[in-house]
Length: 240
Ligand code: NAD
Image 1 (tube, rainbow, N blue to C red):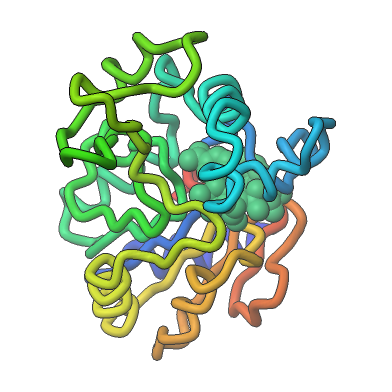
Image 2 (image 1 turned 180 degrees about the vertical axis):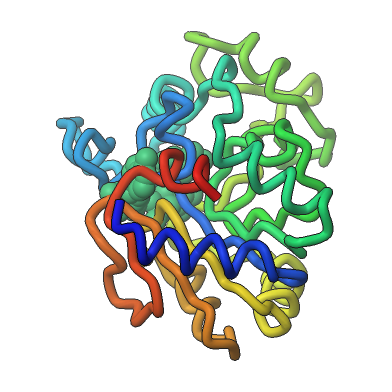
């Protein structure tokens, strides 16, 4: 990696008091969870329907069996462990450098690594709710349904993962809190995201500072960053 960029980033992290991290699926690929649009991503594999169709609200309503089959086999990774990126961010929070993690991920690995202030824009596989009676179920309970079709509550209702599907709105409270932290960030570090999923990606436009860095395989996409590193985020954060 370019020494100058690394030095600049190191300086920013050293001085940071209100850093915010904004991330996506690329943060967890080093934990063995495939992303959507990266080189080994789910969107490059072949299914009977395109993944973005399967994980849409209307598809979930009309074809729940296919939806849950895809969800269980392609979106649940119960044995994945946090990697250096999750651990580093948790450490920075503990040291008083980092205010919050805003993530598009649904895997819960930031919390598993010890991060406390995590805003999950697209929900979490760890929360699941009966659509009829509102009873909550853990990921472990959902896994017991493996291979048995649509998961159902003891009351007979369908148990839906609290994951934001295409066509569904984002949680307003989570959005407002994420925005609140991004607005006051001294450093905004963006990583492992293609920044093409809206409205989540639009949140970064609320950053007011000049220390904007993007660490992403494939480049910064639409963002004009002061520092851009095209490479594996684990390798970069390990050096910070
Ligand atoms: P994306 O798949 O669109 O983009 C991921 C980006 O990360 C790509 O540009 C890829 O090149 C890059 N990348 C992959 N591995 C990397 C690494 N090791 N270091 C640096 N960059 C790396 O994902 P997205 O932007 O998060 O948006 C798509 C949606 O995917 C989100 O809504 C999210 O909910 C969902 N998703 C989540 C998970 C998860 O929870 N782990 C996994 C897959 C998809």
